[in-house]
Image (cartoon, rainbow, N blue to C red; front, side, top):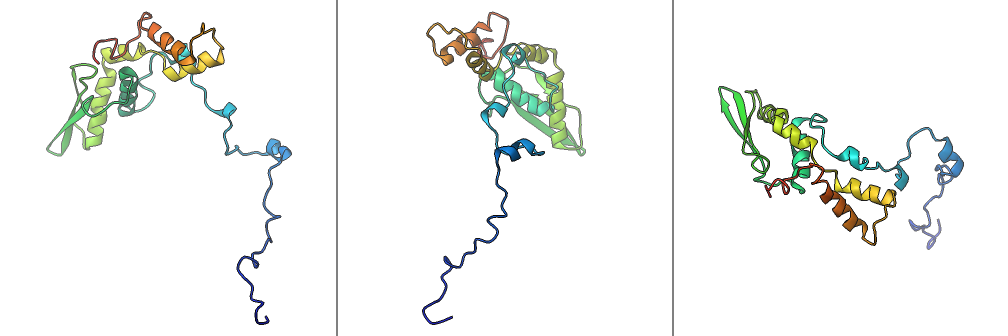
Length: 189
Protein backbone atom coordinates (compact mmCIF):
# COMPACT_ATOMS: atom_id res chain seq x y z
CA UNK A 1 0.00 0.00 0.00
CA UNK A 2 1.07 3.47 -0.69
CA UNK A 3 1.23 6.16 1.89
CA UNK A 4 -2.17 7.83 2.36
CA UNK A 5 -4.06 4.90 0.90
CA UNK A 6 -4.74 3.11 4.17
CA UNK A 7 -7.98 1.26 4.21
CA UNK A 8 -10.44 2.35 6.83
CA UNK A 9 -12.50 -0.33 8.57
CA UNK A 10 -15.66 0.99 6.96
CA UNK A 11 -14.37 0.66 3.42
CA UNK A 12 -12.85 -2.76 3.96
CA UNK A 13 -16.11 -4.40 5.08
CA UNK A 14 -16.78 -7.21 2.72
CA UNK A 15 -20.19 -7.87 1.27
CA UNK A 16 -19.24 -11.44 0.57
CA UNK A 17 -21.80 -13.81 2.02
CA UNK A 18 -24.76 -11.44 1.92
CA UNK A 19 -26.10 -13.17 -1.17
CA UNK A 20 -25.91 -16.46 0.70
CA UNK A 21 -28.39 -15.35 3.39
CA UNK A 22 -31.81 -16.95 3.01
CA UNK A 23 -34.51 -14.59 1.84
CA UNK A 24 -38.07 -15.45 2.76
CA UNK A 25 -40.53 -15.23 -0.09
CA UNK A 26 -44.18 -16.16 -0.30
CA UNK A 27 -43.33 -19.46 -2.00
CA UNK A 28 -40.76 -20.40 0.63
CA UNK A 29 -43.25 -19.66 3.44
CA UNK A 30 -45.76 -22.07 2.00
CA UNK A 31 -43.14 -24.80 1.51
CA UNK A 32 -41.44 -24.50 4.90
CA UNK A 33 -41.65 -27.58 7.08
CA UNK A 34 -40.90 -25.95 10.44
CA UNK A 35 -43.12 -23.66 12.50
CA UNK A 36 -42.87 -19.97 11.83
CA UNK A 37 -41.18 -18.08 14.66
CA UNK A 38 -43.30 -14.96 14.26
CA UNK A 39 -46.85 -15.07 15.51
CA UNK A 40 -49.51 -13.20 13.69
CA UNK A 41 -52.76 -12.24 15.34
CA UNK A 42 -54.69 -15.12 13.77
CA UNK A 43 -52.36 -17.72 15.32
CA UNK A 44 -52.69 -16.49 18.92
CA UNK A 45 -54.43 -18.79 21.29
CA UNK A 46 -58.00 -17.66 21.70
CA UNK A 47 -59.61 -17.72 25.12
CA UNK A 48 -62.18 -20.48 25.54
CA UNK A 49 -65.84 -19.64 24.93
CA UNK A 50 -67.58 -18.04 27.90
CA UNK A 51 -69.55 -21.14 28.89
CA UNK A 52 -66.37 -23.26 28.81
CA UNK A 53 -64.29 -20.85 30.90
CA UNK A 54 -66.79 -20.97 33.77
CA UNK A 55 -65.46 -23.11 36.59
CA UNK A 56 -61.96 -24.51 36.97
CA UNK A 57 -60.38 -27.95 36.87
CA UNK A 58 -58.24 -28.11 40.01
CA UNK A 59 -56.43 -31.24 38.80
CA UNK A 60 -55.06 -29.66 35.61
CA UNK A 61 -51.61 -28.93 37.13
CA UNK A 62 -49.84 -29.39 40.46
CA UNK A 63 -51.73 -28.35 43.60
CA UNK A 64 -49.66 -25.23 44.46
CA UNK A 65 -50.04 -23.82 40.93
CA UNK A 66 -53.77 -24.46 40.94
CA UNK A 67 -54.11 -22.85 44.39
CA UNK A 68 -52.61 -19.63 43.02
CA UNK A 69 -54.74 -19.79 39.85
CA UNK A 70 -57.90 -20.45 41.87
CA UNK A 71 -57.27 -17.55 44.24
CA UNK A 72 -56.46 -15.28 41.30
CA UNK A 73 -59.91 -15.91 39.83
CA UNK A 74 -61.78 -16.20 43.13
CA UNK A 75 -60.39 -12.94 44.53
CA UNK A 76 -60.47 -11.11 41.19
CA UNK A 77 -56.84 -10.07 41.72
CA UNK A 78 -53.41 -11.60 42.26
CA UNK A 79 -53.06 -13.20 45.71
CA UNK A 80 -50.83 -11.22 48.09
CA UNK A 81 -49.08 -11.98 51.36
CA UNK A 82 -51.75 -12.67 53.94
CA UNK A 83 -54.19 -14.26 51.49
CA UNK A 84 -52.61 -17.66 52.09
CA UNK A 85 -49.44 -19.07 53.63
CA UNK A 86 -47.78 -22.31 54.66
CA UNK A 87 -46.61 -23.11 58.22
CA UNK A 88 -43.96 -25.83 58.18
CA UNK A 89 -42.42 -27.67 61.10
CA UNK A 90 -39.58 -30.17 61.03
CA UNK A 91 -39.43 -33.03 63.51
CA UNK A 92 -37.01 -35.94 63.16
CA UNK A 93 -36.14 -34.91 59.59
CA UNK A 94 -39.80 -34.94 58.49
CA UNK A 95 -41.57 -31.75 57.44
CA UNK A 96 -45.23 -31.22 58.23
CA UNK A 97 -47.05 -28.27 56.68
CA UNK A 98 -50.34 -26.55 57.41
CA UNK A 99 -51.95 -24.37 54.72
CA UNK A 100 -53.81 -21.27 55.93
CA UNK A 101 -56.14 -19.65 53.39
CA UNK A 102 -58.26 -17.07 55.26
CA UNK A 103 -59.28 -15.24 52.09
CA UNK A 104 -61.23 -18.36 51.06
CA UNK A 105 -62.12 -20.25 54.24
CA UNK A 106 -61.12 -20.47 57.89
CA UNK A 107 -60.27 -24.17 57.55
CA UNK A 108 -56.71 -25.37 57.99
CA UNK A 109 -55.34 -27.91 55.52
CA UNK A 110 -52.81 -30.37 56.94
CA UNK A 111 -50.27 -32.10 54.74
CA UNK A 112 -48.68 -35.47 55.38
CA UNK A 113 -45.13 -35.69 56.80
CA UNK A 114 -42.57 -35.51 53.97
CA UNK A 115 -38.79 -35.48 53.64
CA UNK A 116 -38.63 -31.98 52.07
CA UNK A 117 -40.39 -28.73 52.82
CA UNK A 118 -41.58 -28.37 49.21
CA UNK A 119 -43.17 -31.81 49.12
CA UNK A 120 -44.85 -31.08 52.48
CA UNK A 121 -46.30 -27.85 51.03
CA UNK A 122 -47.52 -29.78 47.98
CA UNK A 123 -49.15 -32.26 50.34
CA UNK A 124 -51.00 -29.47 52.18
CA UNK A 125 -52.08 -27.94 48.86
CA UNK A 126 -53.33 -31.40 47.82
CA UNK A 127 -55.42 -31.51 51.01
CA UNK A 128 -56.89 -28.12 50.01
CA UNK A 129 -57.58 -29.38 46.48
CA UNK A 130 -59.33 -32.54 47.77
CA UNK A 131 -61.69 -30.54 50.03
CA UNK A 132 -65.37 -30.64 48.92
CA UNK A 133 -65.92 -26.92 49.59
CA UNK A 134 -62.91 -26.06 47.42
CA UNK A 135 -64.10 -28.26 44.56
CA UNK A 136 -67.60 -26.76 44.72
CA UNK A 137 -66.23 -23.20 44.67
CA UNK A 138 -63.89 -24.02 41.77
CA UNK A 139 -66.78 -25.47 39.75
CA UNK A 140 -68.79 -22.28 40.32
CA UNK A 141 -66.17 -19.68 39.37
CA UNK A 142 -67.40 -17.14 36.80
CA UNK A 143 -65.92 -17.02 33.31
CA UNK A 144 -62.71 -15.07 32.87
CA UNK A 145 -63.11 -11.44 31.88
CA UNK A 146 -60.71 -11.91 28.95
CA UNK A 147 -62.91 -14.63 27.46
CA UNK A 148 -66.03 -12.50 27.92
CA UNK A 149 -64.40 -9.49 26.20
CA UNK A 150 -62.96 -11.60 23.39
CA UNK A 151 -66.24 -13.31 22.55
CA UNK A 152 -68.21 -10.07 22.91
CA UNK A 153 -66.00 -8.61 20.16
CA UNK A 154 -65.90 -11.78 18.07
CA UNK A 155 -69.65 -12.37 18.07
CA UNK A 156 -70.36 -8.69 17.43
CA UNK A 157 -72.98 -8.71 20.12
CA UNK A 158 -75.56 -5.93 20.03
CA UNK A 159 -74.30 -3.91 22.97
CA UNK A 160 -77.12 -1.34 22.83
CA UNK A 161 -74.74 1.62 22.78
CA UNK A 162 -72.48 0.34 25.56
CA UNK A 163 -68.73 -0.10 25.22
CA UNK A 164 -67.23 -3.59 25.12
CA UNK A 165 -65.90 -3.13 28.66
CA UNK A 166 -69.32 -2.06 30.00
CA UNK A 167 -71.08 -4.92 28.23
CA UNK A 168 -68.48 -7.43 29.46
CA UNK A 169 -68.78 -6.16 33.04
CA UNK A 170 -72.56 -6.56 32.86
CA UNK A 171 -72.21 -10.13 31.55
CA UNK A 172 -69.73 -10.89 34.34
CA UNK A 173 -72.11 -9.54 36.99
CA UNK A 174 -75.01 -11.53 35.48
CA UNK A 175 -73.10 -14.70 36.34
CA UNK A 176 -73.87 -14.07 40.01
CA UNK A 177 -77.52 -14.89 39.28
CA UNK A 178 -76.37 -18.11 37.57
CA UNK A 179 -74.84 -19.29 40.86
CA UNK A 180 -71.22 -18.35 40.25
CA UNK A 181 -69.03 -17.45 43.24
CA UNK A 182 -66.24 -14.97 43.91
CA UNK A 183 -64.82 -13.62 47.16
CA UNK A 184 -66.74 -10.38 46.67
CA UNK A 185 -70.04 -12.18 46.08
CA UNK A 186 -69.38 -14.47 49.07
CA UNK A 187 -68.80 -11.38 51.27
CA UNK A 188 -65.11 -12.16 51.89
CA UNK A 189 -63.55 -9.06 50.28
